[in-house]
Length: 108
Ligand code: HEC
Image (cartoon, rainbow, N blue to C red; front, side, top):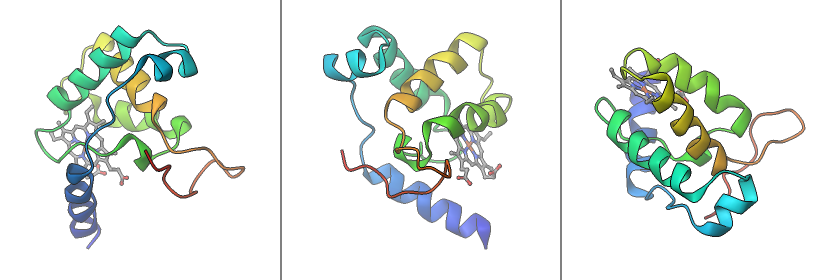
Protein backbone atom coordinates (compact mmCIF):
# COMPACT_ATOMS: atom_id res chain seq x y z
CA UNK A 1 0.00 0.00 0.00
CA UNK A 2 2.68 2.42 1.08
CA UNK A 3 4.79 1.22 -1.81
CA UNK A 4 1.98 1.82 -4.31
CA UNK A 5 1.62 5.36 -2.99
CA UNK A 6 5.35 5.88 -3.21
CA UNK A 7 5.51 4.87 -6.82
CA UNK A 8 2.55 7.06 -7.68
CA UNK A 9 4.37 9.96 -6.06
CA UNK A 10 7.59 9.08 -7.85
CA UNK A 11 5.77 8.98 -11.15
CA UNK A 12 4.19 12.36 -10.47
CA UNK A 13 7.61 13.75 -9.58
CA UNK A 14 8.93 12.46 -12.88
CA UNK A 15 6.56 14.67 -14.82
CA UNK A 16 7.48 17.86 -13.04
CA UNK A 17 10.95 18.67 -14.32
CA UNK A 18 13.61 19.20 -11.70
CA UNK A 19 14.34 22.91 -11.32
CA UNK A 20 17.39 24.13 -13.20
CA UNK A 21 19.40 26.46 -10.95
CA UNK A 22 19.78 30.09 -12.00
CA UNK A 23 22.21 32.77 -10.76
CA UNK A 24 19.30 34.13 -8.69
CA UNK A 25 18.92 30.79 -6.91
CA UNK A 26 22.65 30.65 -6.27
CA UNK A 27 22.69 34.02 -4.52
CA UNK A 28 19.43 33.27 -2.68
CA UNK A 29 20.91 30.19 -1.01
CA UNK A 30 24.51 31.40 -1.07
CA UNK A 31 25.82 28.34 -2.93
CA UNK A 32 27.68 28.74 -6.24
CA UNK A 33 25.75 28.18 -9.44
CA UNK A 34 28.32 25.61 -10.58
CA UNK A 35 27.78 23.68 -7.37
CA UNK A 36 24.00 23.68 -7.68
CA UNK A 37 24.24 22.59 -11.32
CA UNK A 38 26.63 19.79 -10.39
CA UNK A 39 24.29 18.74 -7.58
CA UNK A 40 21.41 18.49 -10.03
CA UNK A 41 23.54 16.37 -12.38
CA UNK A 42 24.52 13.98 -9.61
CA UNK A 43 20.99 13.84 -8.27
CA UNK A 44 19.62 12.69 -11.62
CA UNK A 45 22.64 10.45 -12.18
CA UNK A 46 22.72 8.75 -8.79
CA UNK A 47 19.14 8.85 -7.58
CA UNK A 48 17.03 7.72 -10.54
CA UNK A 49 17.96 4.08 -10.91
CA UNK A 50 15.27 2.69 -8.58
CA UNK A 51 12.58 5.38 -8.65
CA UNK A 52 12.13 8.62 -10.54
CA UNK A 53 13.86 11.44 -8.66
CA UNK A 54 11.51 13.15 -6.23
CA UNK A 55 11.00 16.87 -6.74
CA UNK A 56 13.06 18.90 -4.25
CA UNK A 57 9.73 20.37 -3.07
CA UNK A 58 8.79 16.88 -1.82
CA UNK A 59 10.46 17.71 1.51
CA UNK A 60 11.46 20.77 3.56
CA UNK A 61 15.17 21.62 3.57
CA UNK A 62 15.60 20.32 7.11
CA UNK A 63 14.46 16.84 6.04
CA UNK A 64 16.63 16.37 2.95
CA UNK A 65 20.02 15.61 4.55
CA UNK A 66 18.55 12.72 6.54
CA UNK A 67 16.67 11.41 3.54
CA UNK A 68 19.76 11.51 1.33
CA UNK A 69 21.78 9.80 4.05
CA UNK A 70 19.16 7.07 4.21
CA UNK A 71 19.51 6.48 0.46
CA UNK A 72 23.28 7.06 0.30
CA UNK A 73 24.37 3.47 0.67
CA UNK A 74 21.95 2.08 -1.88
CA UNK A 75 22.91 4.85 -4.31
CA UNK A 76 26.66 4.28 -3.74
CA UNK A 77 27.21 7.93 -2.89
CA UNK A 78 30.64 9.32 -2.16
CA UNK A 79 30.67 12.06 0.46
CA UNK A 80 31.20 14.67 -2.25
CA UNK A 81 28.10 13.43 -4.14
CA UNK A 82 26.09 13.46 -0.95
CA UNK A 83 27.02 17.07 -0.18
CA UNK A 84 26.35 18.33 -3.70
CA UNK A 85 22.99 16.55 -3.86
CA UNK A 86 21.95 17.90 -0.46
CA UNK A 87 22.87 21.45 -1.51
CA UNK A 88 20.79 21.14 -4.67
CA UNK A 89 17.76 19.63 -2.93
CA UNK A 90 17.83 22.15 -0.08
CA UNK A 91 17.97 25.05 -2.53
CA UNK A 92 14.57 24.07 -3.96
CA UNK A 93 12.98 22.39 -0.95
CA UNK A 94 9.47 23.17 0.16
CA UNK A 95 9.22 25.96 2.73
CA UNK A 96 9.54 24.98 6.35
CA UNK A 97 6.48 25.57 8.47
CA UNK A 98 6.49 26.23 12.17
CA UNK A 99 6.08 22.53 12.79
CA UNK A 100 8.95 21.86 10.41
CA UNK A 101 6.81 19.69 8.19
CA UNK A 102 3.95 19.84 5.72
CA UNK A 103 2.93 23.04 4.02
CA UNK A 104 1.97 23.02 0.36
CA UNK A 105 4.76 22.49 -2.17
CA UNK A 106 6.05 25.79 -3.50
CA UNK A 107 5.08 26.43 -7.07
CA UNK A 108 8.10 26.86 -9.32
C1 HEC B 1 18.81 1.03 -4.79
C2 HEC B 1 17.55 1.70 -5.06
C3 HEC B 1 17.42 3.18 -4.67
C4 HEC B 1 18.28 4.21 -4.97
C5 HEC B 1 19.58 4.16 -5.79
C6 HEC B 1 17.70 5.41 -4.39
N1 HEC B 1 16.52 5.11 -3.77
FE1 HEC B 1 15.25 6.42 -2.85
N2 HEC B 1 13.98 4.89 -2.39
C7 HEC B 1 14.20 3.55 -2.67
C8 HEC B 1 13.11 2.77 -2.11
C9 HEC B 1 12.97 1.24 -2.21
C10 HEC B 1 12.24 3.68 -1.46
C11 HEC B 1 10.97 3.36 -0.67
C12 HEC B 1 11.25 2.74 0.65
C13 HEC B 1 11.91 3.67 1.60
O1 HEC B 1 11.35 4.75 1.92
O2 HEC B 1 13.02 3.33 2.08
C14 HEC B 1 12.81 5.00 -1.68
C15 HEC B 1 12.24 6.18 -1.24
C16 HEC B 1 12.76 7.45 -1.43
C17 HEC B 1 12.11 8.68 -1.02
C18 HEC B 1 10.71 8.79 -0.46
C19 HEC B 1 10.68 8.94 1.01
C20 HEC B 1 9.26 9.28 1.41
O3 HEC B 1 8.57 8.36 1.86
O4 HEC B 1 8.88 10.44 1.23
C21 HEC B 1 12.94 9.70 -1.34
C22 HEC B 1 12.70 11.17 -1.13
C23 HEC B 1 14.14 9.10 -1.91
N3 HEC B 1 13.98 7.75 -1.98
C24 HEC B 1 15.24 9.82 -2.32
C25 HEC B 1 16.38 9.24 -2.90
C26 HEC B 1 17.61 9.96 -3.16
C27 HEC B 1 17.86 11.43 -2.84
C28 HEC B 1 18.46 9.08 -3.75
C29 HEC B 1 19.89 9.32 -4.21
C30 HEC B 1 20.83 9.66 -3.15
C31 HEC B 1 17.76 7.79 -3.85
N4 HEC B 1 16.52 7.93 -3.30
C32 HEC B 1 18.30 6.65 -4.43
C33 HEC B 1 15.23 3.04 -3.42
C34 HEC B 1 16.32 3.75 -3.91
